[in-house]
Image 1 (cartoon, rainbow, N blue to C red):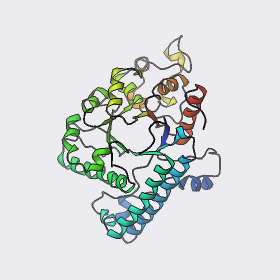
Image 2: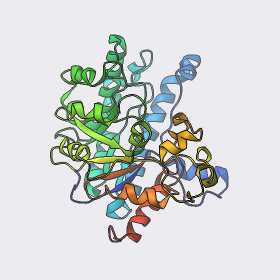
Image 3: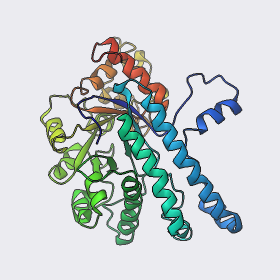
Image 4: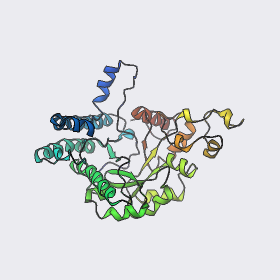
Amino acid sequence: MFNDSIKRIGFCCKYLEEDQTQKPKILKEKQQMYTEKSTTRLWCNNNPDKAEQKLLDCVEHNMQSAYNLVEYVSTLPENMRMVRLGSNQIPMATEPTWRYVFEDKTVIKELEKGFSKVGELARDKDVRISFHPGQFCVLASDKPDVVERSIDEFEYHANMVRWMGFGKEFMDFKTNVHISGRQGYQGIINILDKLSPEARNTIAIENDEMCWGLDESLQLEKHVALVLDIHHHWIRDEEYIQANDDRVKRVIDSWRGVRPTLHYSYSRDEWLPEPSVLGANHQHGDMHDINNLLDVGCKKQKLRAHSDFYPNEQVNDWALSFWQDFDIQCEAKAKNLASKQLYEQAIDLKLCQTT
């Protein structure tokens, strides 16, 4: 279990070098040490004699890169020791044709050994780690076959959680998904008893920006932990929710005493209009009223896209107002470079001390 008396700002899945002007080959080699490799079903099907070894090579690399990523994060200030691991650690693990590769007992032992090292390092260095299964994990689908495949995908993550030594207590590790499917929150309730203990202990539900927002997610507050995505809420519900909102308190309570996680992203600049378009009183750096953006022709579909960094200090201040009660997972495209930027603003605001 991580030390949840420490508030954290983290990033997702990939490491980026600070100096992006290095020669592409050198840059790729440095960053690949911390980034998972994968392959495709098409490649495997077209190269059946090479596919098994390719998959095993990918996994060997990915276990080491996950270890390297956690090790890198462990060197950061304690308030930055949080990272989401990529979900494609074991390519084709749930693909019917190729999953047999990872059902071999010898391979399973190697997986247990490799992932246990990642978990031990995270606990030893107090790095908070998590997963976020992708868009095809639709646990609340109205199609039974999709639900079955989605549970399989979620349990694939639970296996890695188990091998890393987590999932023993409620929310000692976070694996968050969206409600997604047409059955809504009731669909999530319906599958909870079908999950393994590790999956049940680590499942968290995040509000999305299109269909199932915070109010819908709160229907699950007594069943699972809830992840508040403030950018999603801004887009879907068209408001800057405040840290003292009663709904935020309910999100916190859903974690049953464990420090909750919040997701933060910002719309890409190319989809935001110049201040002059919004009126004479609007200036660069103002917090955008989404209704004004929609009135001048901005589309929510475009506003969903995540920026590389966090260019708006006022919006950053708003996001950091939640930090007293939430760890902040940065979903900006610049990964660790963006989380460092937000952390430095937190220092400037004297919200933490450098360590």
